[in-house]
Length: 608
Image (cartoon, rainbow, N blue to C red; front, side, top):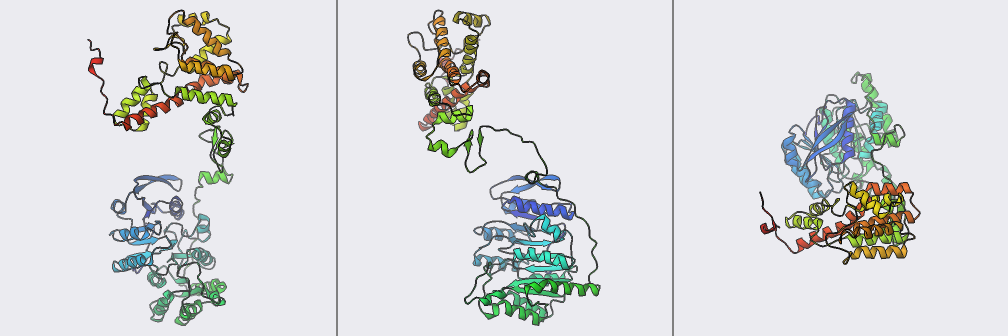
C-alpha cells in the first residue's frame, strides 16, 4: 500500500468501459481547478478503437479509445490510475489485467457485487506489488484542486459549494460514497476544506481500508487533520484503533461510526452496503465508537454532533497556527452544454433538420401524426403507410389500394431488364445485398422505369392546355423529345402490356374520374398510327392514373399535384416496387450459388 499522496495536478487516468457523464465531469473538474492537461488520457472500450469527442472547458477535444488494456497502457505510459466502470461480472478480470500492467499504480473499481473471492485475489496481488485498490462498490476519490475519479463529489455545483476546486487541510475517508458528498459539504462549512477524500466502498472486503488511508494522510504534509466515517459491520475500524494506540497516527482524528440505530431493532439488520451488517457486539457502531474514543480519536455523541466536533478540532489547529489561512479565489465558470442550456431556456439554437412526416419522440413512433398502434389496430396496409409518409395524409382506400397494385405490378419484370441484370451480375460477383440492390437501382432513369414523372408532367401539361393528341405528339417531335410513357421494346398493338390493362380496369371501376388516363389512351391511339410498338406502357399508365388519383381524390390542389410530380414521387413508387424484385434476384442468385458472370465474347461485336 502506498504511504503518501495518491494523486496530483498532473495525474492522468485510463477510463475502462466508456461512460460519457463521469468522464465529462472529470474534465469539467480539471478545468475548474485550472489543470493544463485533461486527467483522462485514454478510454478503453473493449473491441472499439478511435476517438471520443468531449469538452475540456470551452475546447472540444478528442480522447483516444483503445480496444484493450495493454494497448492503452502502452499508448499512455504516464497514466497510472485505472478507473474501472465494468459491470460486476467483468470488473475483477479487467482489474487484475490492469494491476499487472507496470504503469498502473492505483485502481478504482466502481461496480457493486464483485465476488468476494475475486476481490481477495485483487487485494493480495495489489499488496504484494505495492499498488492501491479503491473499491469495489466505490464512487472513487478526490484530491481537491488536482484530480477526481468519475462521479466523486457529484455535480459541479456541489464541487464549488464544497470548495473542492482548491486544496484544504482535511484528509477524509469513508466507506460510503453518498455520505462522502455529505461530509465534503459539512467539512467545507467548518474548516478550510478537503485536501483528499476517499470512499473505500461498502463491500465486506474493500481493496484498501480506512486505516490504510489514514496512515497515508498522516504522511502527507498538507493534511493537518483527519476525518473518518465508518459504519457498523466488520472490524476495519479496529485496525485504525490499533494504529492510534501504537502512535502511528500523530494528527488529530475525528471519527464517527454510523449505524447506532441498529440496536433499536430486535433482529439483525442489513443496511445499504454489503458490509453494513452487525455480526455481534464488537461489530456494532457503539462498540467501534467507544474503541476509537478510548484510542484517542475525537468521537462525538451522535452524528448530529459530528460537525461541531470537526469545527472544534480545526479551530484548535488554527489557534496553534498549524493551519494557515487559505487565499480564496473564484473558479472559472464551466461552459454549459448546449442541450442543457436549451432545456433551461437560457439560449435558443436553430435546428439542423426539419421533419414533417414522422416523430419518434413520444411513447411510440407516429407517421404523419398517426400513432403506430393505430396503424396496426386499424389494419392499415403498405399503401396507407405510403400515403402517410409520402403524402402526409390518409388517402381513401381506393387510392391506397391502387398504390399497392402499382407496387405489386412493378415489383419485377424478369431477369433480362437492365436493373435485374445488374443486380444479378453483382450478386454473382459475391457482393452484399445492399451493393446488389444499388447496382440495379442505378439503372433506373429516363430509359428504364424513370419515365413515370415525365409522363405525368407532359400528359398533364398537354391536357390542361387542351392540346389534341396530334398537337401534343407533333410538338414533342419538333422539340426532339420522345413522348414519355409511350413505346415498348416488346409489347405492341396486338400484345399490349397486361399490367396496363389491369391498372386501367381498376381505375375505371374505382376512380371518380379518369380524364388523364383517357387522354393518354387517345395519345396512344394516335402514336399507334405511326408505329405498332408505340403503345401506352406501364410508366405512362401509372403516370396518367396517378394524376387522376391526385386530382379526383379532392385532397390536393393543382399546385400540390405539380409539386408532387416535379419532386419525383411517382418515380419513387417504381423505385420502391422494383427494389422488391431486385432483392429477390439477389437472393435467387446466392441461393443457387451462381459463379462469377462473364459475358460471352460471341455476344460482342468487336470492331475497329
